[in-house]
Image 1: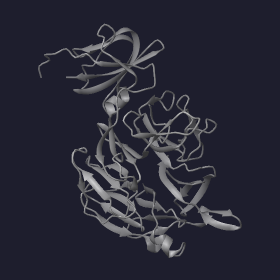
Image 2: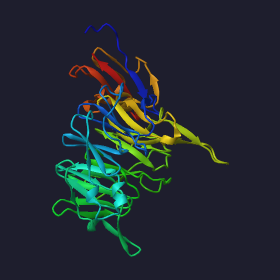
Image 3: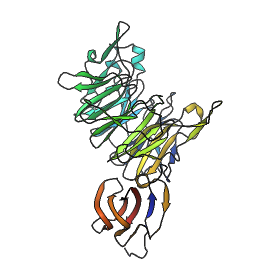
Image 4: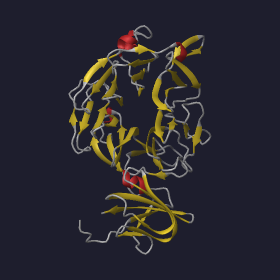
Length: 433
């Protein structure tokens, strides 16, 4: 390719906490609830309408066009990968599974496993939000006190794990809590309920109680060996941890610093890729951190919201509910849920460029006398520590105490740089031709 033009990088000065890029809606559905990236890159989304008029949709072109899948709708709420299958959990104890990246589906049902433990009607109308694929087993945990099950044949037959170890006592009676999430850390399976956190013992199928203060710790993501957890409940205070993480399978926990001045702890969705984490809250908005909470950037622009007003108080932004965040090689995607009876246009799939997310902070400049890229070299106006990332956020080159960095060894593509000059961090992107 002829290098017939001089390419100056767009630079972003990291001095404030508001990003310049924004989210864009790429698909509207009345009650968008989940979004999933299949192994081949297909996008899958669910439309969770209570009258079973929604269903599952798939896109084979990054969201440009969508096709409704030919599968009976059961208000699907969670989608995961389990071996070669994609599994979507729905109401009435139904599971839809696909082996061709979401194009065709078949239905399975596990209600018969719960009849001995909860009322028939509750079993029939149950929905599993908590799913995981752990050591060649598909695990689900139900929402109505039935317990936790696993299948070694992707949902055709099931085994009940030990219910007694999941029980708690209240008012002289024993109960099994409602479960919100399963996830894996340090090769251990963790189960999150409204109040408790459990760890699975694969030798005898029992559950070990780790914490009794879960408080709706139902949002998780894995980041560089750390399982990061947030709480989906209204508690506006800076006196409790914003996020917590474990890296030893739940034995010990540590707090993640919160964005400065932000007291909303109602985390509704979270996603990590490499060392980057993005968090979606209902009133706090969206925040991004590349360093485990040491710095945060507000990336809320483009997420729909309304103004909540009360007499004697300033209006506050209340964002439509983010329910799932995922990513592929180019974009971050979020499912934004709005009640279907609202009959609005805000519910849908929104996306944000990964390159803009990584580099996006406040002001943009293109001053070639300051920092610029040309002819395979990044030039700086002072000695700096420079880290260069590819479009997926992976560190590909680092150089310290330099005023110029050669990127001749890098492949063609878009790259993000972060240069630390004194106490200032300058970020930007450039294209290696």
